[in-house]
Image (tube, rainbow, N blue to C red; front, side, top):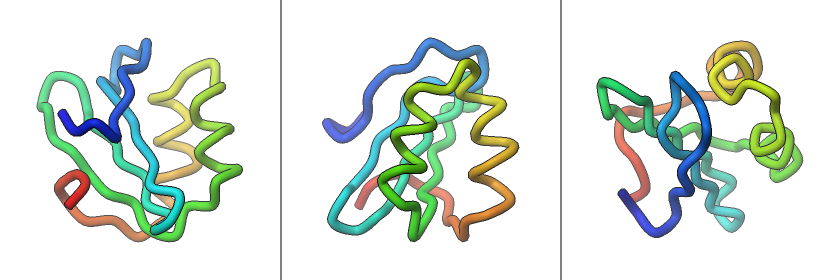
Length: 75
């Protein structure tokens, strides 16, 4: 796991991270241990994700449908 990633208390997500210079969000999914990078994510969205009651639900409802992504974590 990268130093950019912080563990979260979630049944679906193991860790999240954010690069404020690139506006990239990194999500490591629990179980599969697959990481994804989401592009052009505003800092406010990341702050909302960090404080969401359910990180997994937030990712599914607000991140996946709204941001381009690629498999893999931070480069």
